[in-house]
Image 1 (cartoon, rainbow, N blue to C red):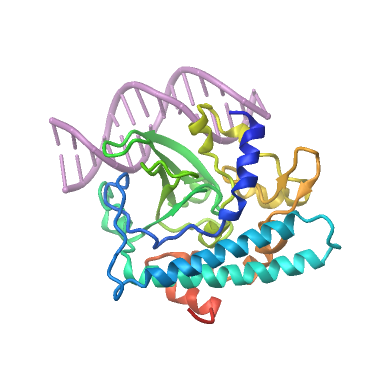
Image 2 (cartoon, protein in one colour; image 1 turned 120 degrees about the vertical axis):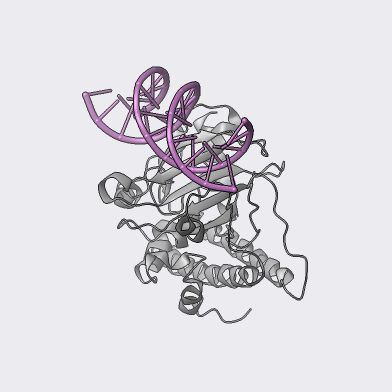
Length: 292
DNA sequence: CTAATTTGACCTCA
DNA sequence: TGAGGTCAAATTAG
């Protein structure tokens, strides 16, 4: 797959950021099979959640337009972007909260080797499974019996030097949806000092696995190099996406992470607060989302 | 040359 | 015993 087409895909789907939903679907033990969303309206306020997600989607679209705008004077676009991101996060947090209240939080239990691990496993379904704010290194890939697509295994890049136990698996759903949806299952919290991550699942932006769709063997070409101004941040995410996207014409378009996300993260709660197992309430409290 | 990915073999668990 | 997870040598790319 050509780098150009991949970049185009990335730009085309930027607005899908923030729509990765830890509670959107209850992951089945097999992961390769579609999980059932709770259809009981009394137990699962899914309709409201969907509305909220749609709002988030629209906000993300607006944000993209702002970020890609070159006519705005410096400073104003960043300010506007921050406001939009703020609203976006409120909406997605609200949706997540609602969905989480009704959907199971435990993902694939099959194959888990210990109770501890099972308790520290959660998942999300997203069209852009890679940039979740942490650095991952792929260490394996397996064909799964019940799934059409192989499952990829990643571990934290700091595993060696810092002993970080975090791992994740990425598997494309069997559906023919476009963009393709991926089930991302995380295991264990990061103990490394890298960016607080899980919150950044909302900012995924680089569909590396796109390479496999197109038949390319390596995905290393697919991501444009980060600009100097964000090299440090990108360095934290070697296998995830850079924090901004370089255009083919040589200019650098600011991404969410560059304009506002870093600022948000600077005042964010502890890195692991997005664990669906233990700290969800604190996250909700931090966002102080107005309503839902 | 170094680092990341691929992939077949091996390990663990149900 | 089979399925899923991990290891590690080989391969690939910068």
